Length: 277
Length: 295
Image (cartoon, rainbow over all chains, first blue to last red; front, side, top):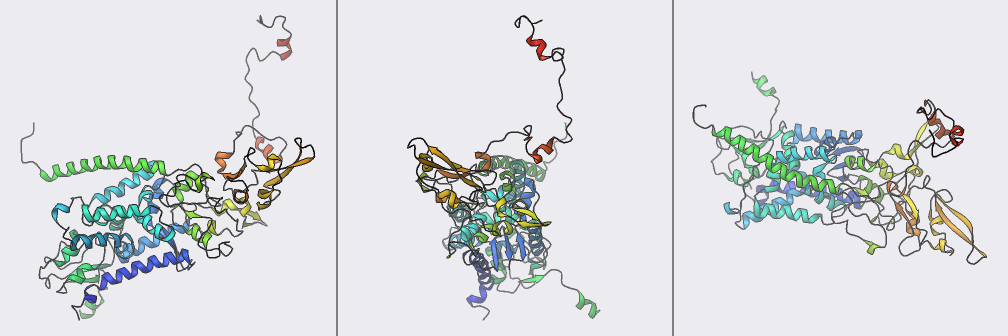
């Protein structure tokens, strides 16, 4: 049972279901007037009541120099609270539609053997923070939210919900970049939204936990991980993956044959210890 | 000179990387910023009712499409399948001229922001203004489309100023003397925003001109007239107010309007510049014997 395909891809399947459901609900919100989820990933409403907003977009708008209505501020705060305290950088792997595009590029890369050194342009993973900083400076200078004008994520999601136009060109660009230039190039190196979530989700509770005693050093986890650097402890220390850059996709957990990786809660109540003592 | 100790490689690497980062950021920032600065402004775009001034709108619009969704799924959408609606979100490529140049189409609507093209679908001026109400950021401000009734704020779509209708006197067939009052009848503020003015037609001598005239202080810019216009390219069309209207400046005051005249209150009056010459009366000046040889 533990070796069957479904079990080995349980998080991947769950993620695709979540991603597609969210996308489907947004599309139905506009196409059929369903009110479960209306708007798009920039800002939306759940059941016409609970607001949500992209905190990075809101930050850029602040940098552009404007005061916003309370709705969108509450929305952004809710999103920040959820990802920073609970979910981690799960937006990138469980919600963002671009994840499916880049995962496809990555999958083709691996299947076709493109996953070699000569097909890898080395870019620093810190580039995303530079772009993040740059976007805020530009927003300030130009008095407009700078990344929102070029974001391929917004173009893709907004396009799927409200009409694509030539937005698919930007998506194709990201796909080809990830396929031919750099593995996980967009999501893991350049995307400032991912960088933003990396920063805010550092304290989150849901984390991958490594058990070095069980690890056989097969390195399956590192091969499959889109943010390898977060798994520095594999085979060395039994600790939580604490880097904000971990997207909580759960791929490492699936491919581990030794049960050395699992999701866990970082801040477990320590009651049991007290009771024993 | 400091002794040539071992080079601190980490330190050197840090500086190199930082400077490289600044270099790349400067290059990338110029291109990126240049694009955004160009792409953030379209002069002839028409925004939904209650939109704050364009410069502020660009900062505030989060591009979520809640207004578009509200417009599409309102109960009174004439398109009962709800496939189309007045408002749409600008997608990449929308700036290509549409309608074969047969009507005004905005050229470069900033990506993801809502706009409408009246000749295709005008604003039907819903009384509950679902689009403005839906906006989470204040880019569409209900205060701009509300009036106070009995001390309460009530939505009032007639206060919307999405644009203003302009008549092309050359190609409006009513100005040729033909009978057409399509725009006048289409106007939701009939006889307020568009009035028909009666004039004798001297060409025939026995017919009347019924000339549509737009009153910009009432016109909301909904564009129903533009849609109704019978000419091939509409002879009445909506333009953003800042394009179509002039400005007289603050120093003009309408003395015949109580409200406008109120602006003078508290003013210190006109300051006089006194020079030796201005102390003389005009008559003195006129009565000088030789005007050219004055003084």
